[in-house]
Length: 108
Image (tube, rainbow, N blue to C red; front, side, top):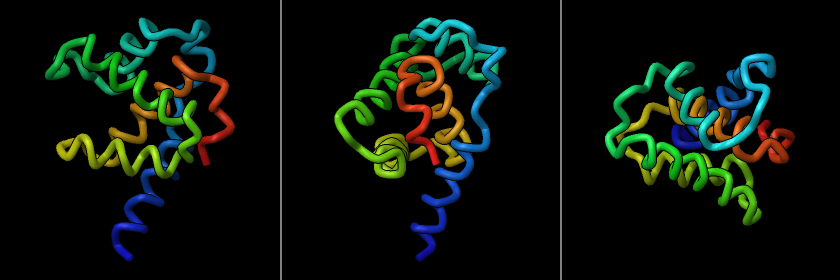
């Protein structure tokens, strides 16, 4: 029960905390990296910017391969046990906004 509530909170946070469209006019991986640095204050991702980019691409690949947003978020949090649900939701929202905007309607 608590796990389901936690996952529901992640999904709600991701949908509510998308960056504003005006802040990101052009969608690509470089924008994703810049936006994560700016929006989340992440400047020293453990694996560097290439690792950060890989995370964003992974998120979009999961959605491109048919995963529902909530399932992708569950996988993402499991694969990154040190990440806070709030941060995971924000990072996923930025990835969708910048890298795979065709999935914006998939975020509930």
